[in-house]
Amino acid sequence: MGARLPSADQPLHPQRGEAPADLIRSTIGVVGHYCVRCGAELEPRMIEGREMQGCPNDDFILWRDPKVASAVVVEADGGVVLGRRAIEPGYGLWCLPGGFVNDDEHPADAAMRECLEEISAAVELTSLLGVYHVPKSDAPSMVGIAYTARLANGAEPKAGSEMLEVGVFPVDSLPPLAFPSHREVIDQFLTSRESPAASSRRHGASVAPSGKRPSPAREQSPPRRKL
Image (cartoon, rainbow, N blue to C red; front, side, top):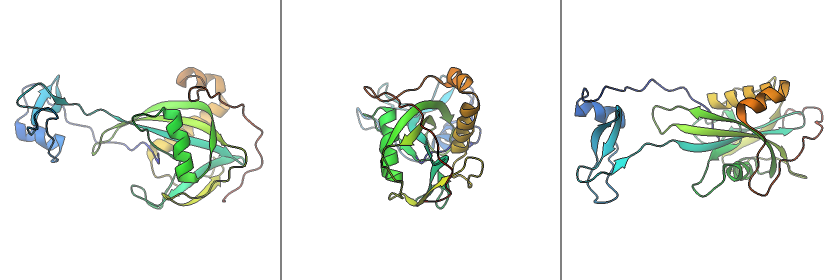
């Protein structure tokens, strides 16, 4: 992903019938959208108290659904694997491997794919860490799905095309992270290590893609700062 949880400005939600059209447009954005049925430009519309866009000729509504993204806490050498971003947002800052889930992907498959792309390493997912709401004011909000993982046998992380470098950091001395949501994921990871039973009750059981079973945890070796 590189994916984290940024705080968003509180959106404006006028009551039904109380917002002029120009105010609705300003909160929807300036990008033009068109009906997929007839091609007409969509118009501002209040639906159930929310600012939406709809077709003036039929009942098509552009629903602003959240994007789904994954993030992975990859345990290695007593720490976690982070990448320093080579792209915006967050250029030069560190993040967990992760990214958006494709429409035909299982979220766990997306998590493993993003690890291959960003840290050039195959991983084995070991548990579902949590599901998070990632609010945004300048883009669709996200549903973040976080996993824990370990490196597959023989895998050695190295920077992919979207990373400047890759490092393994002790969890008690992490560098500044690009996204607040990744800090939330790390905090939940620390909580789960202190109280696995409580974490399982809050965020669900261990999961893996269909036909793949999460591997048991392996003994950790002493921490290593950088790769």
